[in-house]
Length: 401
Image (cartoon, rainbow, N blue to C red; front, side, top):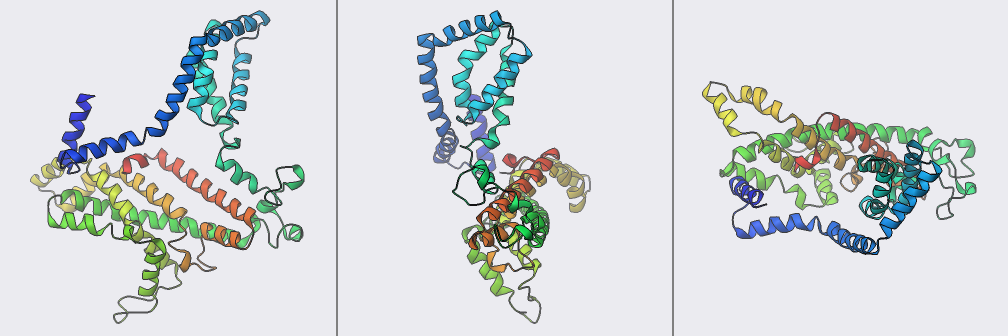
């Protein structure tokens, strides 16, 4: 522990994040605060486990259960399958996996060991059952969101008479029964919103991530110099403004040509939405770029400089190849934020530029709550799929900060 503490303090001093003893205390408090909820959970789980062990109920149940299962010949694969089903059923009522394991482990691990099944196999079976019913657990918010998309009338329960696929694939023939429009997969507005969301997120995230890496390079290589400090300060200005106020400023700026046409009129165009999204997310991208560039040793560039490499050669041969994973992480960090963005771009939206988030908002305002929830589910799936793909290419959002 002392070794990690000394190494961390030394790194913080070198990086400039630790300037005095108060910074050390604040950083330690920040780390511990993230574990506070887990420590509270572990405290009560430990009390339960201690009482359970003191009463020897776990031993009695595991021994009796093992003898009973061995007596009826219920061992091996059938037993593992039943354990998976039991775990999946319990998961519907106890959503926290660590709490569930704290209850089940003292009983089933020794029981299965007596039947010749290793603790590792027991835990694998537990993980399979635990993960299989997460999405349908009533205590999970996504379950409520998804189920509401299938309801005819919200709040009337989940009986078969109140469930329908209309909100997803309904036709105009059924419109009078439910709403006045088709299901989202048959709705042309939804198709346009999907296309606008895809191009806004990809174009905006790529531009923002590239700018973030460049700003991060200036900040890290300019540590202790005026331009490095100025870049770090100025890039966080958009973060200090609310989304609506920031977008209002850009709408006013580009509402008509200015400076003899040097600043064009972009009001009502998709370009203005992209520009606003890019600049607004500079703080996140810059932070990601700074964290990425700090991991690339300056000595590599100095060695290349001594050998006669110019700036662009150093960037192309050293910095960019080493910054690839960090760039993808910064891209995903911005991507997720832009994909669900609403307040920043809401005053710029129209029928031709609306995104899925804006369409869900308008449907909710018009009383089509089920369709709004269905679009929200699509946004979540879109982000999840892109995140999984990005992970295949080395994205790690945790390292982007």
